[in-house]
Length: 70
Image (cartoon, rainbow, N blue to C red; front, side, top):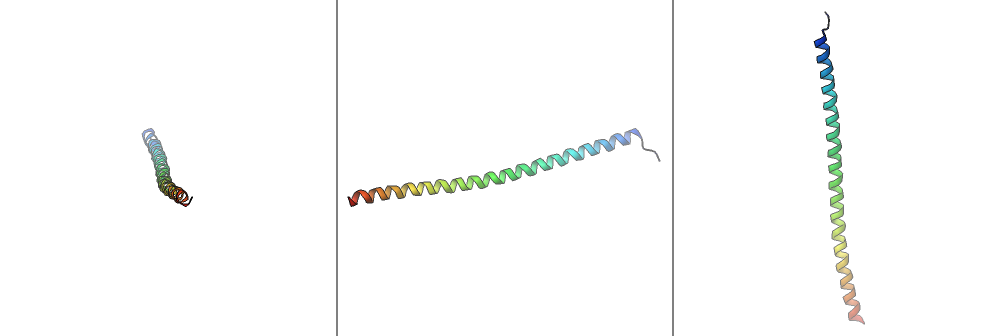
């Protein structure tokens, strides 16, 4: 049983296609991880924005109370 040139070429092409598929899967995994991190950061930034708004309202209330006390 001998291996022909066409069989060698087909094996090489199959190997290259497998390598490309592996690289694509690795890239997709990295993109998914990055998307997850961005979502977490957006959530935290949203919470910090809400906290900042509430602190601003408290500062206004404190200023009003101070002005009424003087």
